[in-house]
Image 1 (tube, rainbow, N blue to C red):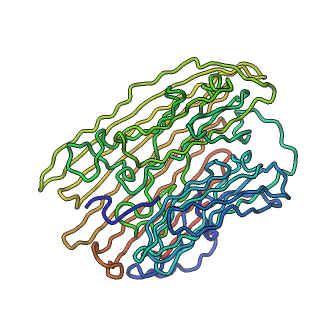
Image 2 (cartoon, one colour):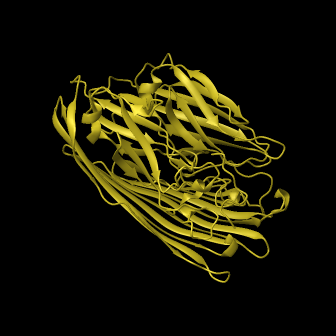
Image 3 (cartoon, helix red, strand yellow):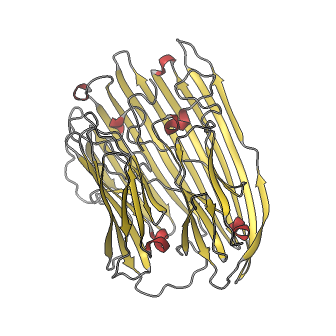
Length: 536
């Protein structure tokens, strides 16, 4: 059965009640029903909540809208009057509700032309659900100090069949700094950017002439209801499968400056809440990152000497592996800028640019009506760029090295009644600036199988993991977000006759120096939350 059958996608932390504390007496878990009914627990994830200062705050409503079609909400943002213009923390909160029947939808929020949130929605119950998403948006403080236009869109379709109107409210809560902030170097991760710049309409970027650190963030999502929603399952044209891509499933998100490759990254294999032909997997616990889509970050500081000439420069994002002329990826770009307060013009040069050969080797093994078809893929790429800047505190050299690797094994049967994938993506990055070194090792895994039996019952069993190890000099911080699910239902049956059952779980762990222990586990059965355990 095709991954796309019956599933169409139009497109942080998800906040729930307080987690159970370790060692505390817990109430008895509710008894789950024997199958899914007309209502289930509101969506929840195990992700850590956004930490908030214990100080006074100011709240501003950014947008309130009901989305029935693809008409954006447009309004105006005005900064708070009573919380100054320097903040220790700014938290964005999105509150949503929907009921009836509706697909998952992709959405965004722009303030002053800057994308501050990319999100997707849960699929509702007939009786209705509500959910909340919170995100630390302190890095966008420069944008939030000025009034600006607001644009928000969660593209939707409402008709006699798909009745769910998506009702949302977005607010910002500001926590002012109580004391004058201390001076910090541009390389200090605690320092917020001095400027946040979207690309111009023609795709160009003009940076301040005294920029001493540049980081591009790209909210890259494969979506739109076509095959790029399931890019990791695509096969070469020679293979008999419903989703084709001449180069197979290898994807790589690249950013270039004036036509020169400036950064590479592995995209995260996001699964939306209708994914893998089985919405019963995601009704309560979504897959990692589904509601708070993290941007890919590229350190472009080695190019700052080139970009600081006061002229516009072309910045482009492309996705390796997407068939020419085919849509399906969204790649909005913000550029974060840290400036040298001691110089009006920071000069420098790009001194090293070493791109390895991009490898992409899909190997197709033909099958038959009685045996599985198979596609094995191995791919990867490496890039090192280095440059120096003549700052007010001396000449500083920045070297960025990034290595990508991907492997996958895709198996399916005639008619796609069995469709399975096992895949691993790694993205390792090292940034050396002066005597400071930051490292990030990211690993994403997916192991899933969908089967459609002779009795027309569809079952999906899947495990997804989002893991990272980061080190900015104080030691390694380890993060592990793992989702598991097993759900089945009667396919090609009316909603009330699907007799769906499903168990899902998520465990999110964070540990390391400078990071408090965090370990939360969730489990559900037939839409009932049966476990909410905090182990730390």
